[in-house]
Amino acid sequence: MTTKDIGPKNPVQKGAEATIDYVDDRSGIKTGTRWFLFRNIPAGTSWFQTLGFTAMVVFGMQAITGIILAMYYVPDTQGGAYKSIEHITNEVTWGWLVRGMHKWGASVMIIVVFLHMARVFIWGAYKYPRELTWVTGSFLLLLTMFMGLTGYLLVWDQKAYWATVVAVNIFASAPILGPYIGDILRAGPEFGPSTLSRFYSIHMLVIPGAIATFIGLHLYFIVRLGISEPPWSKRRLRIERDEEDARRAAAREKAKALPGSANYPASWPVEAKEAAR
Amino acid sequence: MKPADKKAYDKDYSNAKKTGKPFFPYAIYKDTIIAGLTVIAIIILAITIRVEVGEPVNPATTDFIPRPEWYFYFAFELLKIFKNQDALTPVIMATFMVPNIMIILLVVWPFIDRGPERRIWKRPFALGLTVIVTGLLCYLTWMGANSPSGVASAGIPVSGLDEQATKGMAVFMANGCTSCHMVAGVGAPGPGPDLTQEGAKGWDNAKMIAWFKAPKAPMPSYASLPPQELEDLATFVNGLGTKYK
Image (tube, rainbow over all chains, first blue to last red; front, side):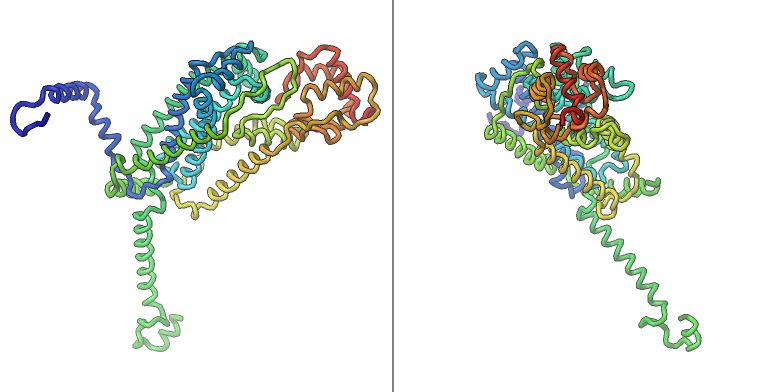
């Protein structure tokens, strides 16, 4: 239906606008969206600054594939866990693909998070005022590593089992707190059925919750403080060139007053020239 | 950073923002392209290199290869470097000191490096650190990827074995001890120490069996082995380098 300039508004449009206004009055959603989406960022923002967003998208993909896997996975040490992994891989429609994406996604996420950190480090982007953005990000890196550690056990095959036994022993060997951490991870003094349930719960509830929280904080800091400008953006290079030119000009001015230069006053007496040398 | 530097930075950044562009769509389109390509890469990897289903867990037969995911190879290799109990390379360096120092440094780094300079070629220390840490991580990961996961061998080339020690060697082989320990050139060079001269310590069997049941991390416990096998194993290990050479 075509709308005309004059005449009453389409009731559907009117209703939609009224609804948006109603929600906006109570939540400030319009202002919030504008604050988030239409904030200005430095013009030189580079392709290297897409890695953080990419890490977040891969985390989202891990969440979706993880939810699908959880629909079929059984955390049972009496063969159930292993059988359910076999079932997902061999029988469930597209199951092999979802599991493959989850497994490869973990590796890719580690790489992307590491590259993101390297970019921030090399650019000095963690410096004032973005120190806390770095701190929240470093926790995200550690949580991502823990995600890999806890997820590895869930497939319940020999390689994963023994690697995790060794990893938990390493945690348990730490001074003072070590034995307690070991007991918490194992759900008791020995590896057993409760250990698998515990790792499953840590892997799919505790750490994802923590990661989501830290992503929220991380994003809040990024939007509030602004994304860092590349230290060699066109604008920065122009400023540095101008500063360099000004410095050179000042040096030239200074040189004029020195003996031996073309502008050195020839009318000065020879003795004064000698003394100046 | 001095207050004046902070002020100068704030002013410079607000100028950059004023002459900048809106986040939507100028940054989000780049983000979407790279993130999209990454997801496509993951799907291609998942299709071309299928994930396998490994051997089911069997805690009773400890014939295992303790290999972590590739992104923990560096930690695994660290265990091989610091695997001894001596003062120079104590195992606690790999299991506790080095990882925790690295984690603390990582988290508090912005409060250590507070200089105003952001260009990497004017921050030689940070540049050196980037190169050294990245290089070390790559090197250790590469080492981990190429490390032998327990050298397969019918037996260990030691002579003078009596009947009990022969049984003990069979237990040693069957339980994957060689995937962490080397004896007379057989087995992986770590994370566990070389046991070729283990008998020189002069332990008795009771002490060795107590160790098998409750060893120091990262070695797993072998308390589930039958008492006779533990006895044979202890006899074999306690004679290495002395009775059985």
